[in-house]
Length: 304
Image 1 (tube, rainbow, N blue to C red):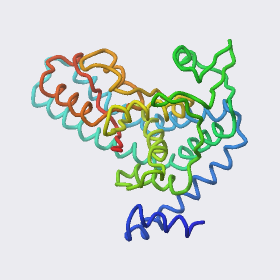
Image 2 (tube, rainbow, N blue to C red):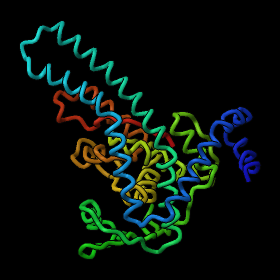
Image 3 (cartoon, one colour):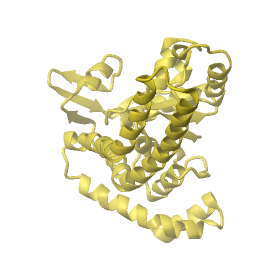
Image 4 (cartoon, rainbow, N blue to C red):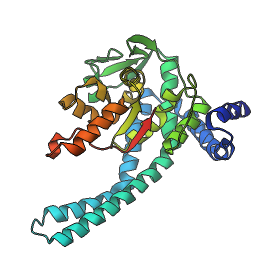
């Protein structure tokens, strides 16, 4: 099986892939080991993994976040501070922000095996079960108002494995293969993963999107046209929503609207390169007050 996948990956990554594969295969094995362990969990226990991961991220960043906040409080509490002193503090905040980004990558790297495994196990459960019974939280209840694949009855709920995507009702039928795990690892590293039509690049992207969504600083998934942006939001969205991550698409809303601004507040935001680009230009060319900004920035992006 490994030899077969390596031949397939030669087409995806080219001849240079062999060295990279030697580094990636141990991670794939780790992911699959974690995947096996998750199968004994209840749906609620599986869902609780996301909160656990987010808490681990918070704990890992606690010290540097405290340092950054203390510097900001120092500026806020001293409005008459000397300009040069204030500039020096801002420079220190910039340095700490860069250090924080590095620490984010460190903790996410630690979470890769478990995080990717959670997404794969969720995909497996949707394939093998028509419904997944849960104890709903407030987000589930809110989503159920306009999501026909979520049903809430008092203190119990269900996620169905069929939903509308791109105008068609689909039944979830994909579980991440090893080649897609490798694609997800490559994407998380910020590298190019060239995958042919039908080799699962859209589902591979759910792995790093979920992982980076744990940071709650914004994940952008950039597609080439309006139809794909909306379809992929609907197609992949339930996997994220099952775990409490919010998903939206900027192309659903007109520019300069509250709806679009809220779409950028989602944990994972889909959209076209044109809309992301124009919103960035508007924010950096015409906005005069912070509350007019559409984009909040982002931690991670995938260009599909």
